[in-house]
Image (tube, rainbow, N blue to C red; front, side):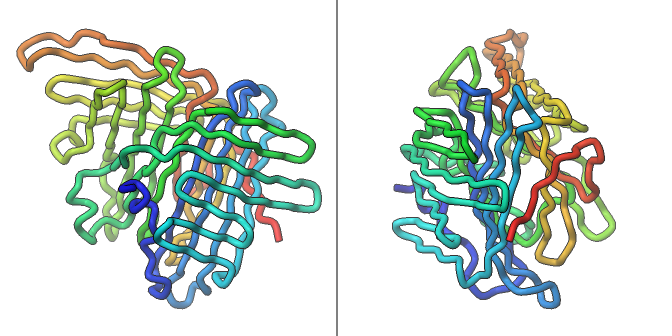
Length: 340
């Protein structure tokens, strides 16, 4: 299926200066828990080490944030494998396919495993205008081959088993030469008012030499069969976004629709992960999968008429968001632990 092609590995297996990520975020609503699973590879530039793969897992407990747990393991590139059709990644004994994922992480005090499946989506969400994907000037490109899917299966974290039956989540694929200088991202497909609704937002500041761009924001709101997309070049100047510890606010304006929203969490709901670009520079990701969210959509029949509120969507503990910076947020205390 066409969405499977969008999960295929971009790296040629040789070239330095490349990173690539496949990640899933989803919720187990009955327990108020969110999960983040990430399969990655990195091919550093010369002088910054050898290529490697990395397997990441995080659990977020909205009711008991002290139970939040985040572990990752680096693997030599010899333990990484990929095939295009049918799509499959292997990191050690962890596997990601287009519709299924399994894996295991074990440290001295924790044992984690997952065995999940989902029906692949019928379309791929593109974050950016099409021309971004057809040119080489962008440092990072991203798509969501499975933006809004329902996951089933089991996750075991120590003595706790989570059984998932059609739980909401999404799966994305990104690749490039370097992470953005700074960015914020939000996703939700578990709104209380409408099970068909899904939101994807990305804001970024891009560095070129000594120049850092203003914040650029791309947004799409899916509502039943309707798509309110604000991702074309002309719409970017009409979008706004800001973020700080545990808060991401955004808005976008088009000729016939406008959207405003925010994702919010406590500092203790966040976990900090350290990414390393192929050039050796660090980026610090502050992530949660149990945020609260609210989004409001206004529409109008023509550019000469007034906007009227069409809907207001809310989520309690089922919003996913993160923000990435070149310095760590000191208010986020829990960090990803790299295990051997």
